Length: 169
Image (cartoon, rainbow, N blue to C red; front, side):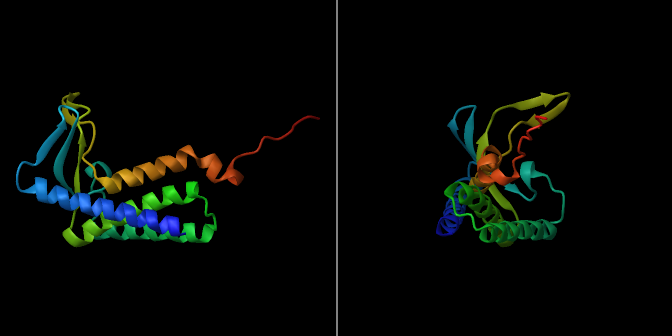
């Protein structure tokens, strides 16, 4: 469990430190610094919604849902009794990312985003779109953890994998 809680603390710390740097360096001045021209920049944004900036619920409801999901994941990991790093790592990333964004919602009323990959922006069928949202370290941790759960599902949950039946008769 030490690994699980260490990952959570590492993600929260990295997330909050980088967000503070983004606020200090980007919010009041030039809101974007190009790192790799036409591909990657540090771009300040305030997100009151969830993924891709979608606002599907009032802030209090969003905060409550995030808190419940985070608590449920922690409860599950503690009660699962599985202590393999491959099990603890993705859940630690997800919980740390969830708490990192929750800290923003509680303390400043929105999530600070600042990482931007400019993969495509322009018109599609007459509508202006930006293909990739601006995101942060917490979002990256949540996404990485979720991808790990998908990629390693059979190794993490071998009993849930359907077994082939021997139909020889």
